[in-house]
Amino acid sequence: MGALEGSLTFKTFYVEGEPPDDFHQDYLNRLNRHFFEPLSPVGEEERTVGWVPAQDPIATEFTRDQVFYNQYIVFAMRIDKWSLPSAWVKAMMRKAIAERLPELEAEEAKKQTEEGKLRPKAKLSKAEKNKIKLEVTTDLKHKILPTMKTIDVVWNISERKLRLWTTSSAVCEEFAEMFEDTFGLTLNMDNPFLMAKHLGLSEKQLEAMVDAEPWIPAYDEEN
Amino acid sequence: MDMFEKIERTRHFGEAFMLWIWYHSVMDDTLFYLSDNTTLALAIDNQMTLEAKLAEAEKSVLSGGAPAESQEAYEGLRQGKIVSQAKLRVQRDEKEWVFVFAASSMTMSGLKIPALMTKAEDEKLYERQALIEEIDGLMRGLYEKFLSIRLDAEAWKTEKENIHNWMVRQGQEAD
Image (cartoon, rainbow over all chains, first blue to last red; front, side, top):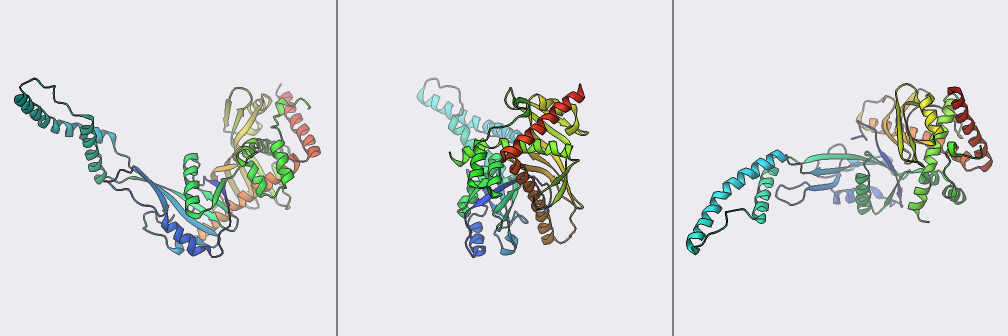
């Protein structure tokens, strides 16, 4: 949240690269190509990320009027992940193992009778435990919804500046990669150097910035 | 030198900018004049974080009251600490913004903007963005003014003397 309501905590990025003349249809298609795909209870994916409309994160596609507001392009990054209740997983695992053990013990007893020699105590192998865990988690995933997080994006196309409503470095990094994949444009996060560059400082002034040493008044011996 | 290195080497400009804001907000009675003739009032609000960078990493988080005029803040400055972030209150005309400004990344968080005038959803988005862009523009204008001094050898020499003298004076007042 943030673009339309709620907390105003964001990171600013500079968008490097030129958008095409008639970018509206092109960018709408690109957003729809990278649209969010929901997690499936039977799949192996634990987390999924994609673009959704900022106003309707459970929509299934973008419409033009959801995205374009004069100079602004508005959308959201949606991140879903399975967050299974560990107490339930443990309890269901214990139950499933307890149900499987008598069966296994009967198999071992049968083998012992057939072979006529002592067999080790019936125990589930690692592969069998993993299989049970997969069955338990799949069962649970059918009963709950994944956690959903949406992070708003407002891109001012005329100023080539973009705001992402988060301060998480990991999310910013993932966002920048997805943005580049989607639009073929690179992003640079705001900082003292790039801000100076975008304010129009000359190459000579920017070089002077790079050469300047930090100044801390307490350590200044000249004054 | 690649862009990453240039960005990392110049992060201290954000810290010097914050110190410059602190100094002028106290000395000039919160008034700042930008190069496009904009006038704004800016004060450090009730939250300020000072950090030691050269010695062992040590952080002082000052909150409540007016930390920018507290002896703890001046003491931190005399010990060689830098202001890593502060809550700023900015006013222009009838509008007011409050936010935490982080020096080395120049980012705003927890921004409070003036109350919106419109009720329509689409209009809310434009108004909200316009108010964010307005404060962003004011901070950029301030940074531009700081840079014009910081990158002018003579002007910076004088500014450094003034800030240094201010720091020493605050220490004498405390003694």
